Image 1 (spheres, rainbow, N blue to C red):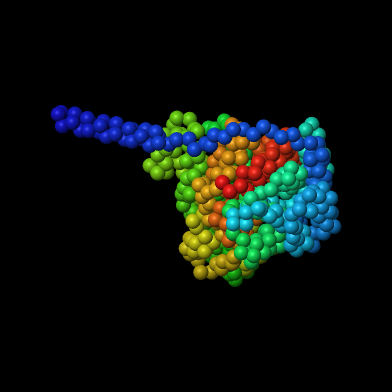
Image 2: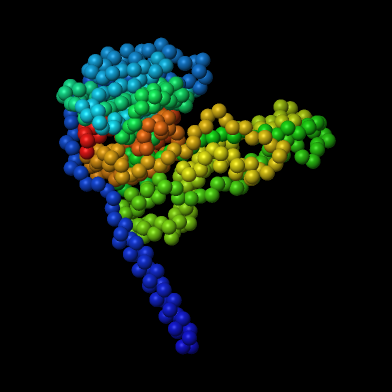
Length: 490
Ligand SMILES: [Zn+2]
């Protein structure tokens, strides 16, 4: 009896120590939110709204098929820019790349300071003719109705191009002189990979020996009601982005007539390979950007979440389990596996010789396209299947620091323009043009100052793309404030 009592006491003491340890970690888990005095919203006149809506009327579409590229619209956009932003075009050095991409250079007064780069893209995805009728306002109308601006590009990503140009033009009117040089880089083919736009601009800057203090591109935004257990708006600054590779699997086995089938056909082999890949997903793990997200938002969460997040290493499997409950969550903690094309056979009574499938992978930082291929080969483990890489490959980016000058200034600007909004670092699951700039700076951030919520999240590349007028005004205010904060020495 005595022994059992002692043992129980011992276990109880252990439990107390464990709980004390959890609480101790929580004590040190302080808020990382910056406090800054809000900047009074500047008046933005109606002409600025009109210019934005006019820009949305120009169909700078990156088509599925390059043969459908409409150069006349891109030339129209070019004259739109020179006509509407006269100071920018007279006081900044403008360079064109492959005719329709632009780099503006606003020379700073202190050449010893590293320049900053603001990026955006002026092309948009097509608005499918098949679902035009489902748009409440025509996709290239630029209509302003009930204080909402409608059109393709309203959030992806003409809002960046025009928002930045409005900010620069306004600062030029006020005779603002930056200390750091500012580059504005606007690509015209982001939706097709950015090879002629962003990549060419980046190469030019690299050849010139430019090293940027920081680069800011699109990628993440202000999330409203989209982070579980957090009511406030959350501005997400992407500090890394996932990589991209598609692999085509192909098998060729003698076919024949379906009345006397062989034991194993090309379709069987391919089907098995794809099932194996889906049954052996990449291991889930907390990568650096997700770890940062936990550190930024954990302290702002309700008690239990906070306790778990404050002890993230201890509760790693619990946290991963929570993430993996949803497909959005899963995409943040693992290299994802998506079979997207599956092809074989043409006739119901003929066994085909060839079966192919394409599987798309989005690669977590810390892994690579090469490590994906090795793993896929090992899992499929079938010599008859050949594996070919797709044309477009993007390695996962490096992870940028949350302590850098750039991150601090973006963070401060958010606090000043969007008071009450929480700020967090995060991982971008798509690919942005900023990946072409990875040689130019260690500090690459992905944040567009627009608000995303459940009603407009699917309008990216989807239907009814739009932005409320007051939110667009904040986009301009954000870039004005960032240009001020980010171009001074400290
Ligand atoms: Zn975009």
